[in-house]
Image 1 (cartoon, helix red, strand yellow):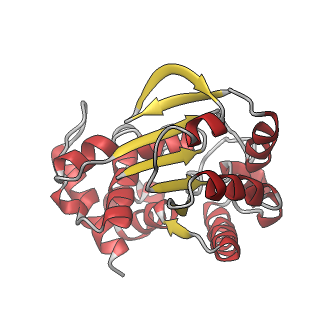
Image 2 (cartoon, rainbow, N blue to C red):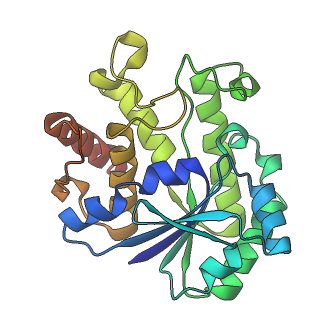
Length: 246
């Protein structure tokens, strides 16, 4: 399987360990990520119109040193899955998705007609996040989660896309696994109040992608990144599988 993410630092988080996680579960998966920090759907659409080579090209979680346009990336062989997402601060505001996401979607379908189009559902900020866009959601994690859940669902339905439910899975662990109940002294799944923690949060996202895209039980993935806690990641895998099996 070969995936292309048209994203930002949140898709970088999600795909950082995906290749290695998949490999450890016996799945051959190449993941390509187009990175511009904080990039919105509106900016992606603008960059398409200008064919702008502004995206840092990352393959299997590592930067290549090359900068490309969306059109350039789409022309580099066949992809099985292409993912789109909104920038995190605007993720709960459906009006910021359109018409821009349709412009990006249409180009992807035109250039990669056999690829499955998926929405990468991002996650709500930590309860004490100081991100400048958190006030959009009254500085409430639950409010942000509720809004982004609806926005991603409605956008995906409008375009007939599937969803990779990273945000829902992050929230499931926060609510149901005491070890990750940050408000009650547990471990935060974020490293700075909004990006995923390294390596635990990033592995969580990789497990969600693996199981959602390939149907492989993520509990089979035993990749242990540097500084990873084997017991903690085993708990995350069990919890991710439980969340996705609901």
